[in-house]
Image 1 (cartoon, rainbow, N blue to C red):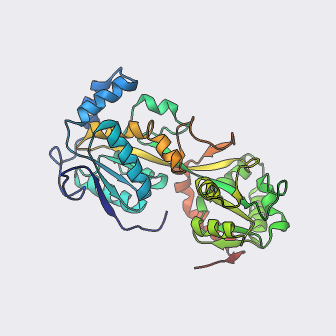
Image 2: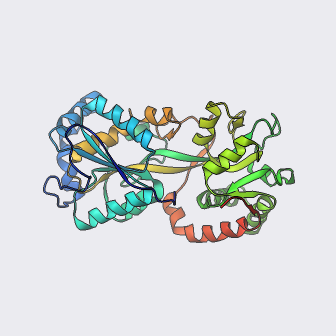
Image 3: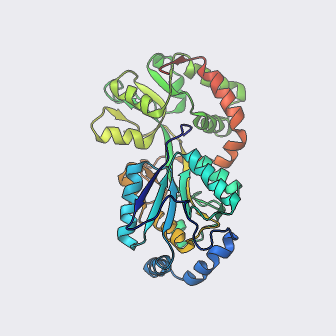
Length: 368
């Protein structure tokens, strides 16, 4: 999440123009979010299902080209836009970059009163920062009722999750030997066999809160617990690296990989698992979301895309091994899933980073 990626501009349309901010639409100057979306809301009032979709498509086709900013993987973004364009016929320009670049660009455009992005989808912490910067207009849509509880935020909506999970190598950890609770991670039998991610500050914060609130542990007990886990553990940089080491059998267990990543390599035949026979609970889900940009030049298109992404776009995410927010599609093996309070985490992030870095120093750093 912290690594910056080179921005690329992808155009999925015919006869499109330059970069997303190369031209201003509908006057190019910001107006209030309510003013921009009020006509759209009035036009679809009382409509649901296909009738609502058809009206939004009609309105969107009267606008200029929709502009979507995201940090999603390029292949996944292309799949989404192919499906969206096929379903609606609406043209889209895609700006794809690292989540921090997306955040910075949107905030700069909003501050300048520039009509750049119409709709944004990226990581939760960056969504919060943009919401705090008054970048978004609220999304009022029937489809949000079908999402996992807690997905609706005041000015943005959860579209997908990064779900942290304990995972193990099934060649090295036989059935019945895998951890079943977080307490099992502190068992000395994992010394030298377990890997942790060196910057999983939010995972640490979430688990610390669970142990304190639900587990009844004192702060001193929680610190002792994490020290026991770290003592003998290897700390790797990046979930992909940690997952590769798990697959290769360098480690038998990892404490906080993403469920979609484990599921993806398992589907390709790797000897790894995270929910068979059951996951270590609760699972902590970091939300990522979609938001309507308040000064959008194409508000109907933005509304249409957001509603499509939260409904028909969800199977595309699932089929790409990304955990969707639609409750009938999120498959966590009936586990107890806790959506992280990103807003609260960000207020406490500095303290969590300091604490986790001290814990990491007790383990062995692997790689760069």
